[in-house]
Image 1: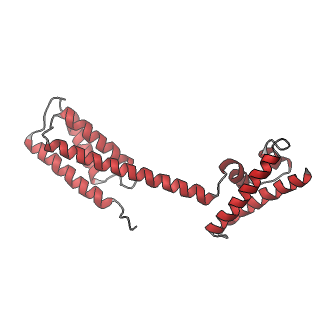
Image 2: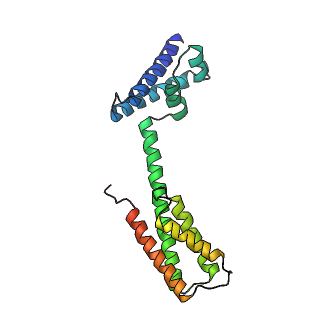
Image 3: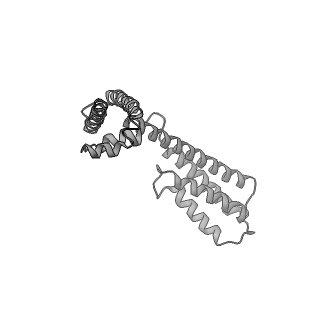
Length: 196
């Protein structure tokens, strides 16, 4: 039993040292990931064998006065190397951004097409511009003063002062279409290219 305790103690201490080395950039990412996966695998195997004797790893660390918060986080809480954890987070962010960009493009096209189809009543145009404005605001790569955001706010404000059944004049409709088109072009130009 004490031999297993010594193994568990050694794994926790080694993981703490590995975490500190990674944070200090003493070890490269691929070596860190390989070694960390080994330690996590050994830890899981040993922890399952000791589950009756050591019901809480945190209590074990406290009992033996181990000051290893990074190891406890990596072994007990996270269960994966930091490189894997951050890669998954970056992928999720990229996916979210791609979905938001697609939503913005869809809302731009829908709004421009509705004007071409002569859907110019306030209750038809206002929801489309509100959706577009909301999707533009979700996209963190656009600055707060981005042309599309400010123009949509201006148009939404203007439409809010009109009645639901009111219609845009020919001139207003053309101006809104022009503003949408120019905002769309600015939006496309603001997106990072695939090469960067």
